[in-house]
Image 1 (cartoon, rainbow, N blue to C red):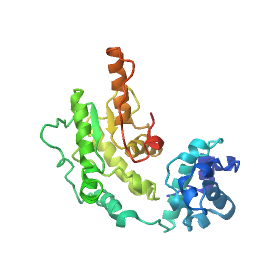
Image 2 (spheres, rainbow, N blue to C red):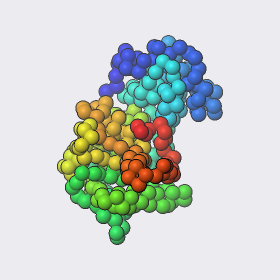
Image 3 (tube, one colour):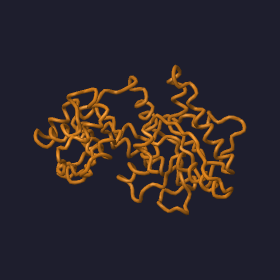
Image 4 (cartoon, helix red, strand yellow):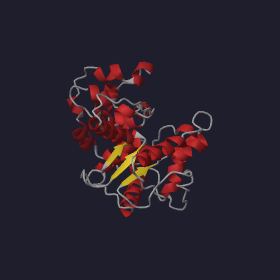
Length: 288
């Protein structure tokens, strides 16, 4: 169920908006679509009602890149507002356009049904060392499926997962790879279907716990790592809205930064540089 309007206003702080326009100035959608701006979306909801906004296309244009929130002098949580509006719209039978012919959403729906058990380990190749239980888990996410679907521009996407395991192995770690991992549910949450997201999140949390990976925020406890910042944010932050305590998760970039800093100090190296590329909202979704 979606939140009541008063709850959405209270938790996202939209009434503190000063109409300064800083959010619109940095919004990539506003630069292309003159009818859209973060503040206009807020104004529509406040003055014309949630139902009016839920029926419009405005809320579905947002990329949830978080640029507006980072620039807002009043701290309005705009992407949280968008998420709650989409929940409201979904409950009312209004849906946004499903991208890629709904293929990616269908993957998640199949996993949510529990009737289909995908081969989650078939991408592992000879020489990659992994564990079934341990202190560190690597959440692979959609990479095996991307390699099969996006054959024209991402045929080697799964190599990112293999390289991540190689990095762990080089540092003496054999990460836990779950054979019962399911979709992280990110796209369901941000398209208004929080019920399916919650179901998938519960199953992943239970699978991690079974393998010995805690989700409690204690630095000395085992950790879950992601090579996709979006999925890391999903577990570490989005899941926290449904489960308590906050999940104990990091993206691989943060892991490498800590290890390289320790290596530089050990060998008295002034600086170590490395390049990490990820096209999925790295700066917006990374917590480090």
